[in-house]
Length: 366
Image 1 (cartoon, rainbow, N blue to C red):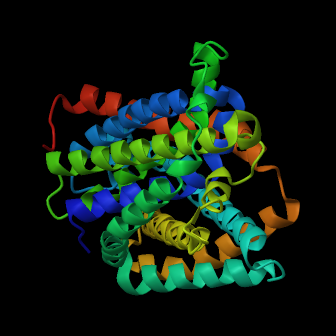
Image 2 (cartoon, helix red, strand yellow):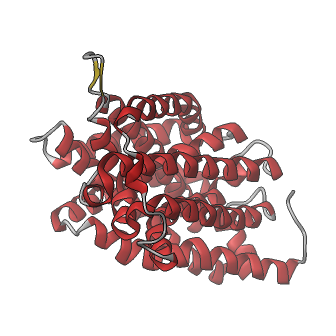
Image 3 (cartoon, rainbow, N blue to C red):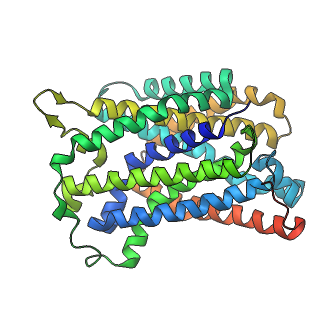
């Protein structure tokens, strides 16, 4: 199973855009108000730093996944123990993505569709793709749909241009301050930081090395730019007061498209590209979860069999999350930002990189 650097770029781009457009804007606008766009600049810079550290670590072991080189760095038991937070994160992320997908679809189109139908359908499609196509199929889907996503987003921003009120972004900085802006950046940077999963994807690239690092960094950088435009458009359309109260502000903004009495209902296209982005992200997580678990228990060749356990476990966990219905803000700030981001995205990669330098010197994979 191999993917190209170009496919990896599109995979990262689609993975980053989907959930960030949907769930991070409300929290950021609530904290940073009209300066939320500055928070996204800070988040983009921090996301690039986190991604570079993870890419630098993987470059030292270009033909090994995180599961393999963590053992090489820390020994058998140390390496296996440090992977446990990642395995928990992977399952948890899939359940949260599916929960948000269900809420979005229920509020938008399928009002009375049972939750198990929506969740089961998406898991079924993801399971089929991962089992029969693996990472290659995910790469091809991303390469096909990535440019289409960019075109639709560009059309969306262009068609909503007439609704913008530039005074909504004023005053700049005066009403917030540095700490408020940084606090607002935590939600988007925690999602941009998910690019650290490249530590599981690196060895599947045809020629892993410097070009692979460049592809991932470009994916995160371009995603940050698109998200910056998205939050600017939302602020200049609704203002910070209304934008911070909307559950899905970007989607609500697209509903306002009405041009020459026949160009409208653009939200259908945005919903379509969002679902494709969610499909790509779920497929990536499902693949690295199954492959990583197989490597973790020493049964790499049996990774496909793990899918028949991972998919039902994800379904059950998602249904539990839907039943408990914890507030999205609590999950984002109370768990994801407070624990997952500092531990899985920052502390563990930096720790492994530092130990690797100490034990193996300045050897690099390119």
